Length: 162
Image (cartoon, rainbow, N blue to C red; front, side):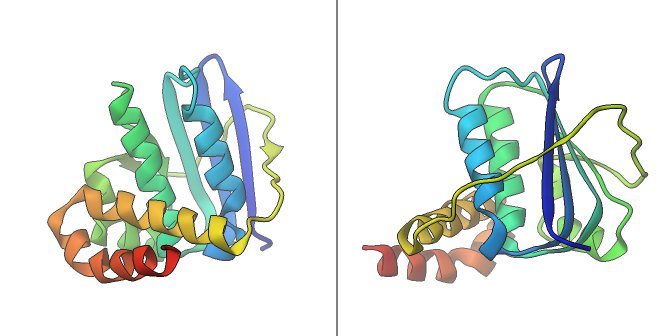
């Protein structure tokens, strides 16, 4: 399945659907969308993420999910709801403690919404590095276990970006 990020905003509910193999090389669209949604007064009062069609998530995409949860927390919104029936994806989410930041529902979804494909212009190498750094910073901010695992990468990225 081709990597795809789909989005809809209906009645103050922001619905994300992530499909296929999601790697940092194709994360710019998700990063742009999150930044646009939360850089102004938030129109999202509820956030739902559907990972049922995702086959792989790298740590950058997991970090983008963590940053999405952090924005919701900062805006005093309810925890985002994350749907996933994929055993490998769920194992990753739980191992990185995303169950602390999301309501994880291991069931299929059948949203009655029209989703639009998220597109963006490619990031420069600097922009991509900054996005990877932000995503991993959000991951280590979740808990000490993630901090121990990802702090060396965050330190290295900071060093390389300066």
